[in-house]
Image (cartoon, one colour):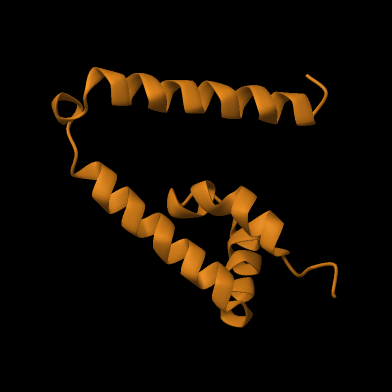
Length: 88
């Protein structure tokens, strides 16, 4: 693999920035080039877009207090695990 080619793992790590149009132009090109050759990553990108559209249609009032707490705890756990991976 060419060093300029993006891996699937790198794409997953960059997807939020891509969807928010926050990638540097060179990274955006690498991201989009990877999508041309990887059906799995194209499917993942579409799933993320669908999830954003769906969640964007839900108001805070429509989420039960228990569900909100579960979501917050999941996020806290994810942040804790992510921090542990980097030795924080």
